Image 1: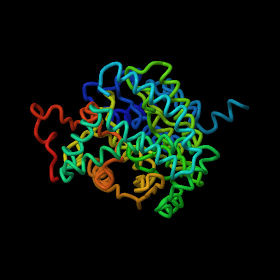
Image 2: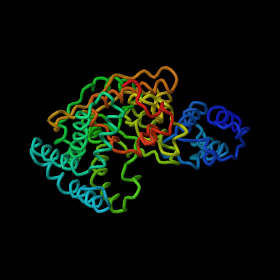
Image 3: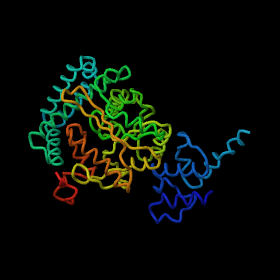
Image 4: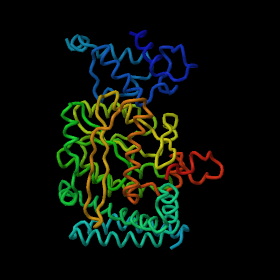
Length: 87
Length: 333
């Protein structure tokens, strides 16, 4: 999952080649990689690729701070994971 | 009245008194009388606010070359009248905006309904033009679920006291946001969730409005594109196009025109604007529609008096002797 998301962010959202290769713990916010429209692109991608649905309350900077944070968020939201969590 | 510190304080106090006490009374009078009195106040401001009047007339003539001196003076006077009438519009938003709805006609509603039938919501592309905030409230109370992307001016105008910010929030923003489907989506720097919140409203087949003529904030300037606007070049943020492409929502133009009697208004909604081509080309079509609306009713555009806003739009007439000519001399007018 880290590779898939890192590839997408590197390909679609990184404007400054100096930031590549992108480390999974690089801050996407402090480096300016992720802006408002970038987050929307990323949300659309994550929903289609991993079959998750994101609500308005999920749109927190912490969930999208780094590739690692995105992966942690997606894993928590993946179908089956929520059911398993709730038994 | 001059433009010194005392004059500015007096005008600020007059503005507070007008919006806080006079306009609510005017809004309860018969419309013909209420708006007539608002126009008298506009005429007084036009005569007394010499610097603002001069800037308005100068910018009108610079960017709308077809206006002669007399027409520019007339448009500038109407600009002050419209600003006073807008206060009455806002005060008529009481009782689910019924007092204002009686005065506002919606043209092109069928375009909006057809767009919503597609199930992907619709983006209403507006400008800071006419009494747009009140008009969108009227649209919402007529049964269209409207959410607005935008910043309240009183929250970012420099030099305002905390009292003034609270006052404008209580007098204006409170009345307008009452007639929206969702809380206003405010695109402040660092608020990365803005576009996703708008997409969420569109997914629920609602209408999202966005004004495309706002001067970009410093944090947005890297995203701004060069477009032809009012016969010259301007730097504007094409977020509306990206939002439309990512969500599949159609983009319709929306303009609000005040009639010659000052009390009746028409909201005009266009058919969807084609989003084909690159981002700058698609956005250019939206901006061209705004230019057309401004030429049709010059007094309705909010930014005429402000050299700072023209500067931030990349159209600064202040730099006419130093900046590249393409940015300063109106083209094709």
